[in-house]
Image (cartoon, rainbow, N blue to C red; front, side):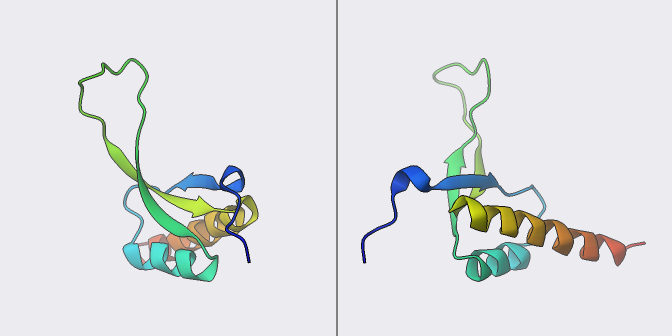
Length: 82
């Protein structure tokens, strides 16, 4: 079995405040990886602080499914506060 083609890997930003348990469920359920990447801001100077963010990495189809899964999970958690 060969390694997955790196050119077919995509990234989905994880919204700030997403519970880690929900992220872990999505990673395991949809065969994704949680990675930390620099967030590129327009007009940033070379020596400026570059913030980092969490992203899910994987195949496009799995990321689309994970996005919906996370969205539904967040909706359910928000309903608890209504």
